[in-house]
Length: 241
Image 1 (cartoon, rainbow, N blue to C red):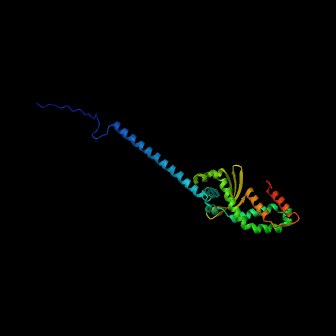
Image 2: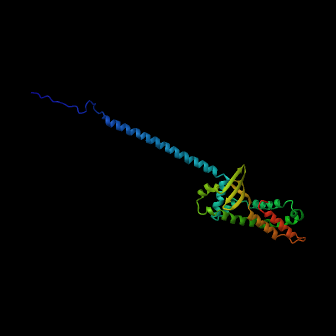
Image 3: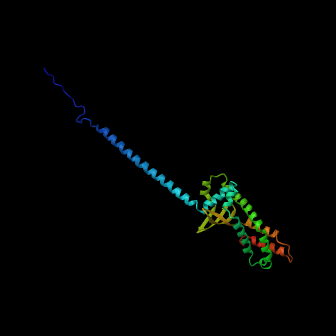
């Protein structure tokens, strides 16, 4: 006698090879999460790339600005790199401008009208000596004024240059007002190749130095010339004159 076998369908209506509903939903959820993570990662990569690209373009543009050359000057001064400082300083023009400053202040004065020949002769004789004096004095003043930058990376100096230097650029001329502690210095810069060079300096200490050199090298005169020259020089050196 044949026995009847009872077969129980454990799949409960599921077709052969069909993934259980719970596993399918879990797999679908994981796949969605992966896409979300990929999208977030792509957005982050684009964001970082955008920042890096923007920073590169800004830095490239900044390298052609007066501020960048000024940062190079500060860094070179603190490293005692005289050659690098000289590449950013036009000593001939700075010296000529100092002489012009003295002449302009004395213009129309008794000193200029009565003894202009003697003064012109003194300036002419001193020009070569003044060039060396102005150069050395500027290096000393620059090193002293830039002491806060000692030991700092160049990138930090470049980013912080605006904290003590007010730079106003107009076409091919930049006027810089430097304020460090109680010291004030005015610089004029002009482009030279890819950098900017200092072509004029306004500084009371250096003006005093030039005036003293002129005084020492004036020829002896009569009728109180030396006394009158001294009075006029003192007037020239008064603040606000």
